[in-house]
Length: 156
Image 1 (cartoon, rainbow, N blue to C red):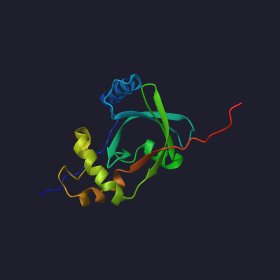
Image 2: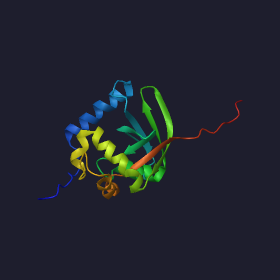
Image 3: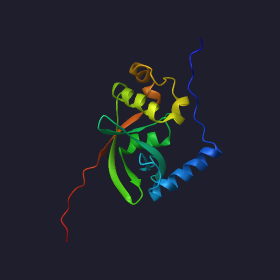
């Protein structure tokens, strides 16, 4: 029996159009509640980049998962360590912390259960042991999301 091999992500026309549509729906607050817009500063250009992404809730914690592998937003998150999450008119500054494979594994398992469209990009399948997700966590980075501390300043 041949082991399954995860598909490689390719940004094609249909996906670009889908991202535009979901981005607009998120900005209007009409997309499913677990989608947000992630805005993060580019590590080279310094320009802000925005993408739609699922904000994963698991074990009373929020997470961002890279289901398509190490993409630009992952490199930018590693470099910046913070971002803005926006949905409708609400936005919040967050701290992004990449977690170890052991911490990421149960989050990845839950993500694959909840987000069927991304399943072809994982070798581990729904129902596989958590260790199967730990084995591929390096290909699907996971970031914990915490609210940034807002520094209080004196008002004039």
